[in-house]
Structure formats: C-alpha cells, structure tokens
Length: 225
Image 1 (tube, helix red, strand yellow):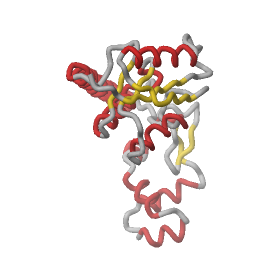
Image 2 (tube, rainbow, N blue to C red):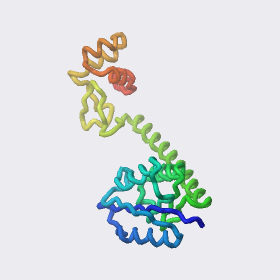
Image 3 (spheres, rainbow, N blue to C red):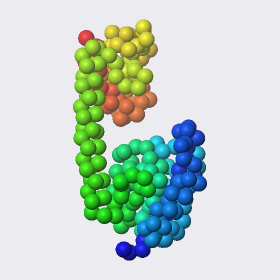
C-alpha cells in the first residue's frame, strides 16, 4: 500500500459538552495513521469553535492550502465527521471539494472514507439520501407555507409587515394589517402604475428596486380590496 501523507484535524466546541478531549482526538488520529503506515505531517486544531459552518482558522488553513496547491498532504484525517462540520450539506460539499482536488478523507471511528472504491460509493449513497431528505423538506416547507397562506397568516421572519400597513393584535394574520396613515397614501401612488418610477424615486426617495419590489409584491392583492 502506498504511504500517504496525512494531516489531522481536531475541533472542540465550548457549547457541545465534549465527550472526547483534543488530546484523545490527536492520539486516535496518530494511532490510525501508524496502523496504515501513513506519515502524519501535522495536526491542526480549532479550539472552542462551533461546527455549524466552515469559518474556522484551522479549517480555512487546510482549505486554502489545497486551493493554492501548497498542501503537503494527500489525506485529511479526523476522529469523526462531526469534527469537520455538523451540517450534512457542508460535509458533502467538503468531500466533493477534496475529491476534485485529489485529496482523500478518512474518519477514524466511522466507516466514512474516500480512499477505496467502496468508501467513495458509500459517500455517494449518503449524498443520495441527503438529496432525498432535502427534497422532502422542501415539499414540507411549501405545504406549510401554503397552509399558512390559506389561513391568512403572514409569512417571513417575525411576520414582516408590508410597506403601507401597520400591525395590530400581534400582526400574525393578514386581517391584523391596517393601513398606516403616513405610508398608505404613498403606497397608493406606488401601486398606481400610471405614475412613472423615475418621478416616484424623487418623491419617495426610495430605490428603484424597492419600488419595483413593492409593485410586484402579491400580498397587496390579498389585503387591498
């Protein structure tokens, strides 16, 4: 078997209640590399960093070295895949990037690796199931949104109110929206398509894209009778 050059990656987080210390992760990586006769060129650590995204110094160091073709390793080794990231979508993107860059990956305690044909096939199977789950999640979200619309509920973060209206009674339903005394007359001018956008920009001091967004917002068809 070819002797590969490996780099180890360790991550710990303050808010996860770690069950394995950095030293234990490092020892596990060293032991595995020794068992495979791989040369461990370095072990990088992100201490006290969340796994919700990839914006971490050590992780970026690895990615940047690969992108700049300055890497002195051929395989990335970590204790578990959740040390790389806790998001399946990020994991699959990361493994895809490694493969396209000619870099292999191995999880010490999981049957996840991209060195053997079987390992690569297993990762592809994970990707297929993840894609199915994303599709099902999208359908569930659409069904929920359709139900909320049917019930007259407002959608969006914190039930954002449309321009020209104010919220009453908590503002969760369309019926809770009432015309705002100052904004509603301006809204009527904006929705009147006989008024040129250039003139509205000067009068309302709104950006052109904002005016077009207001004119195309379908919520006004529901609340303005």
